[in-house]
Length: 230
Image (tube, rainbow, N blue to C red; front, side):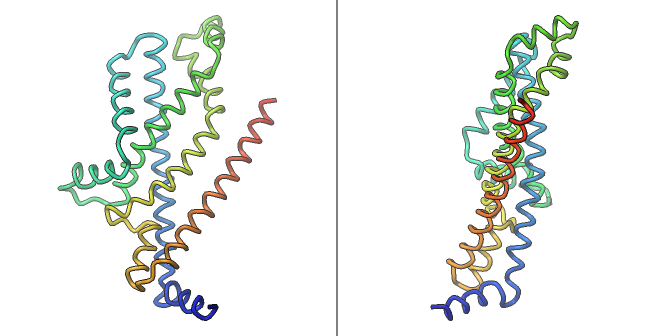
């Protein structure tokens, strides 16, 4: 049994330096995840602010309606369909880097969920905070910037960190556009060795390790926030 395991290990990872597919794929996965989260952060924050302003003041009705439509469509359709639509539909006639397409697709998808995270954070702030801002002479925008958002952002940081973990796992479907991410790297090894168990187990193990590491980081962050909040 040990001999078969060693032979399989050598065949899948050592021979022809096939381990490079996993290393390169891991780099692509982390790059797509990081920049998609940043893009989602910008989109989500903007949509949340617009919808909150409309809910509290009645202004920006058209922008709020567009934001609501965006949330409905993105949250109601699978991310893999969105990825395929953007790659084969929007950028069909354009030669473009697949990593850039993946960042756009996953960023737009993540933005919808981050928008609701930010909106829930804003709603968690007591109404008295708005009244306190007005009593200090702030208008609505100033109250949001200087009083509400700092508190709301602190409340949603752990949830945003968990969204990062979820997005990282969702990028495993990037292989549908032939992007050589971590999962695709394992699939390439499988196609070369005709052995699926070892390379896909390696992919699963790498994802598991990354999730455990980031989860511990989230727990540490939550602990620091609770300590600073006392």
